[in-house]
Image (cartoon, rainbow, N blue to C red; front, top):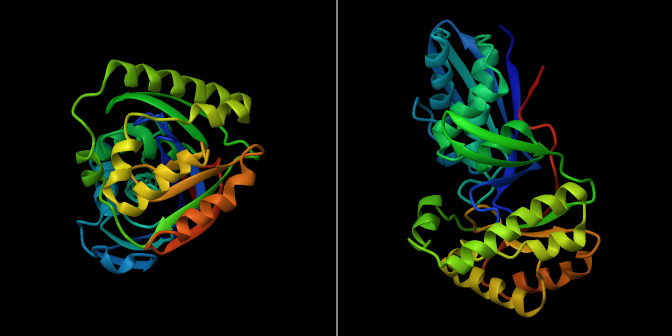
Length: 300
């Protein structure tokens, strides 16, 4: 059997106030190449952060593929897997979601499992624990989702062409578990109401491409004020950005990557954002990314 390729986009979860229920696919990709063997498991990891990835059955891609084999009741004799990574690990850009979705889609294609997108999404949510990253990685675009594994509902709509992100990736990792532990056990009723309103407004504004309202709707009280304190550089940028009126600056996913949303109303502030990055001791890789509206695709 010829080697098949699967491409999976990076994702930015939360998008400010949409904590654990919103995500956007970006045009930064991991690629998987999979070939069926008579027996055995061969894994090659290539690209960014590849050196630290496992080369046995503990690899997240392989574990995800196995989940499809179990669901369908069929598996190949062996697998040759090549993973080429461009999405940085533990930076808040959905690297684990890309592995999960890539493994599920590749396995489904490899064994002709005939699982549909909803069935693949449910498996992805089961493996990841929540849909905010895996849904846009699988489906592309901006996805608003709710529910639990086995019962996930979502609405997907395309990322507007005018919306880009000036994405700043620091040279340090931040685990999702550490970012979770930084969150309070309880929040005030006022903060909960604040985020419900902003999240609902953000969805409507993005669907209507009303960028003035998008900028106003990005304010969050549930996760960013707490996660920004995990690193001095993040805290400095987060606090200063508020003082300087950069309402379109958010933490991507659990961080520590920062994203400044480039819209017609906000492009004038990008130099202020770059100046704030320069004030920190961190090294930042800055990428201008657009939305991805395809999601995970098989490339023959």
